[in-house]
Image 1 (cartoon, rainbow, N blue to C red):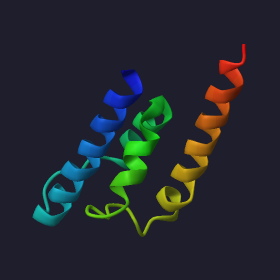
Image 2: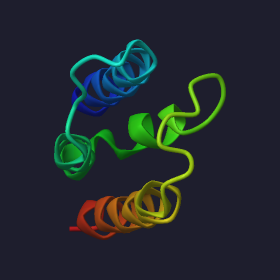
Image 3: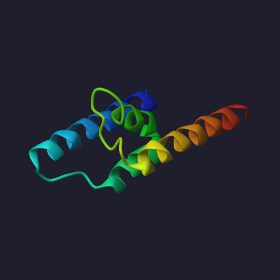
Image 4: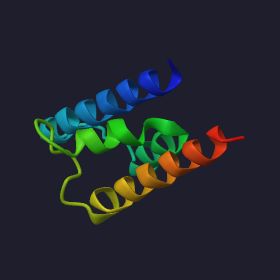
Length: 83
C-alpha cells in the first residue's frame, strides 16, 4: 500500500507543479521531488515526466537521475527481499 500511495502522491505533485508553472504561481522546489522520490515515489515522478504531463522532461537530472534511482530501488528491494 505504501508504494502505491507515495507514487500517487508524487504524480499528483508533478501535476500540480506543472499547473503552477503554467499559471506562474508558487512552485514546488525540486528538492521536494527528489525527497519523495527517495522515499519510494520515484515511479510517480518518472511518470510525471511523461505524457500527458511532460513536467521536468527537459531536465537531465529528472530524465536520467530518476530512472537510475528507480533501478537502484528495484535492485535494493530485490536484494533485501532475499533476506
